[in-house]
Length: 533
Image 1 (cartoon, one colour):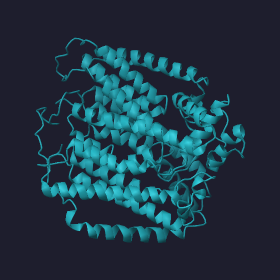
Image 2 (cartoon, rainbow, N blue to C red; image 1 turned 30 degrees about the vertical axis):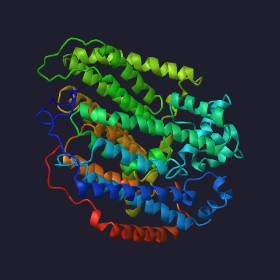
Image 3 (tube, helix red, strand yellow; image 1 turned 180 degrees about the vertical axis):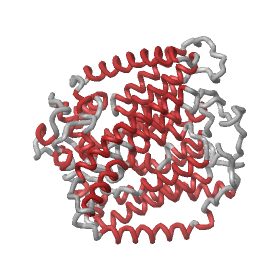
Image 4 (cartoon, rainbow, N blue to C red; image 1 turned 135 degrees about the vertical axis):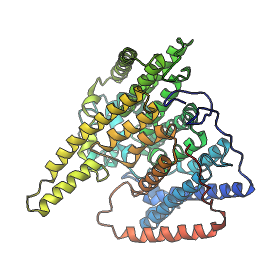
């Protein structure tokens, strides 16, 4: 199969022939799957219980007034230990599920089995207090600003609502004076939520979680379809994508609007490719099929709506344009004409979304708001810290801020240049455009000024449906597992209470080790070595 071409049905990545079918799990493996499911479900339940005292709760925490549930908020160390236990159990269960979902196995998990596992793990998480981040409270405050007829792209919650407002008080201090960095579609939807919930924080969080679940459903719907289209096993794509702990922790539990943005982006790509025929570099290039151009337009529109939530989704239009140009004939004129049409559509949809929000294009001036945070997870920021620290050791003075600024400027150049190179390679048939999309999003975000664990999903989810080798799967698994445990569930630092961490880690480790001992006979073993998928 030519790299990056759209296909119908499951095919082998290398040959383009129908993929070898795998059989259902045998009795022993079904027992292992059952244990893995329950192990992860118990982890989800522990995370939900721990969130009552260790979650990123608002300042006015309603849990305090509930007779039984308030007990956990009065025992923060115990709650954090329970939350960490849940995190570790979910990650371990995901790794175990991966052994039963490895492409190339003689027998592997079926799509219905994977779907049931997802439901079991996700259901308890729907009812948790937000964890790992307090961004959802910023969503509520910014939408209240818009609902009052003010501009969230020019003023922050403190100035617009006042520091005494319950919505402002729930926002972390560092974000109370910053404008909204989110797109016009998200602000419009959030404003509608505010009209329903007012300043009721719990109800507002519930509606935003519903919005995140809609995005999660889009991801679950699109992943197996795109995987089949690009010759990747759909069950494996669901495992690496939808069941990924980063998705569960940061999109479902953390209520991040990446769920909606990435969901729209992936759905848009799938819709756009609905009628695209399979082509190779040497042709033939058939004439336009009935409805083909219409589906390109529909898909591009949905992708643009994703960009109107968070702008990185716009990069998918570039790689969609590459796929359309290659299908058209693969000439530069085809690429330029496709780019022109997609650009007109992109600007038209964004204009409608911007003017429809009543806020105009103010969002375009606030896209770098998050850069005010110096995240150690961002390689370029970490490089600046290292260079500045080295200067101090050498007696050159404290120039950390200047070093960070320079390293970030370099990263701002490297990311887009890599994305452009990947676009060109995709057009020249050197790699699959979906692989290019995932790698380009990863490059732009990783070389950006700020990196958070959930940012990695922009790269991981497109790659899950197109990247087909064991080396990538192993690397993605290791990175996902590491970043899944990188942030504390509280969504805040432990300044003044770091003494809690050793106790919570030790307690969580002991509980997890005990649980592993109890299920030791049903842990999925390492499968025989398989070929790249």
